[in-house]
Length: 171
Image 1 (spheres, rainbow, N blue to C red):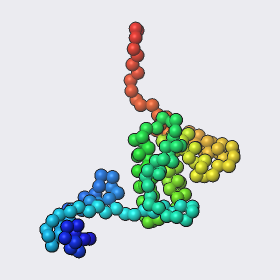
Image 2: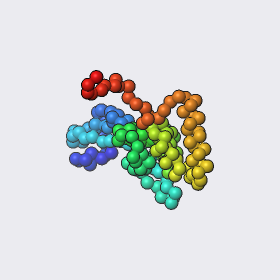
Image 3: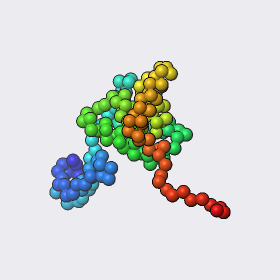
């Protein structure tokens, strides 16, 4: 680490803190040469290997774009999408690999998306699982119904908030 002021090759860490989202570490440093302080940010690199063979840095924004398309016209908020993208990144990072296949990123989207909105899940899954026929959709729908009946849990986007019903007008 070079001091940005005097280019000294040494520095002392004064303080370290994890960023709010937990994906980086902020370090406050002091140069022993000029005694000036500066801040560095450390992040782990995570690369995605595309089908073409090219490698590019993982991007939450790209996850959001794909999921947003699947959720188009569905009762899903931007906050829910941002949380889903964060969950996907955490899942991918927990794999412990510095480079993951693009298909793995798509597969990591499926479970949180299924919990969020079943229709969006089916749209997304039809691409990532390569649905070729109506039977593929039917089997996916059958599986979703069976899971719902077994657990009794509906996706978050379909659940209604527990608010008292109030009516306006003469009683």
